[in-house]
Image (tube, rainbow, N blue to C red; front, side, top):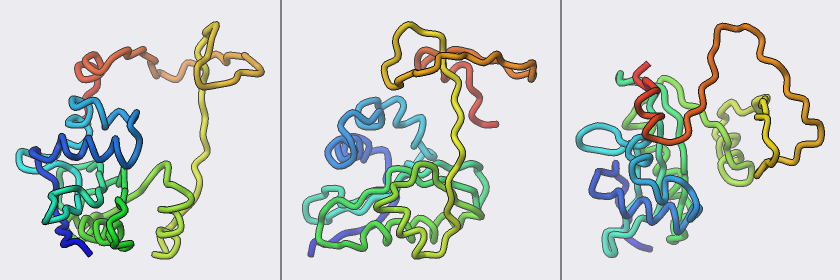
Length: 184
């Protein structure tokens, strides 16, 4: 079995992590090919990324990874794990070791996940006696002639009631960065 060290990833690991996401998660995933968005989402502080890795000490290859989004700068912050992956390396518990490393070092008040894989992560969370459930999903379609990911059978577009909210189209990441204040 390889000698795996679990640690927080740092900025020198970005290229290797993006490659691991492409190779072991999904080559079309935005975090596998958009470095700016990767750093926006997972850039932690000056020293480390918001990602834990298991690294093979002999080959320096990533054997597992777990990203997380922090929802405050406090100690004991709330966070949401994302991209939890154990690369086939002979240690079937590496994913759990990475998760427990993160929990031990972040000491979250609360952590929660959206979009948990029902075949992998969900059974683990249930075994750990974590509270699991399903969210209700809602959407509002745009008025378009052609839809790329949806098959629209009934194209009734409901009016938005006067709620005080404003809907704004943000067509690219640079506009997103200038219009969204994520420190809130």
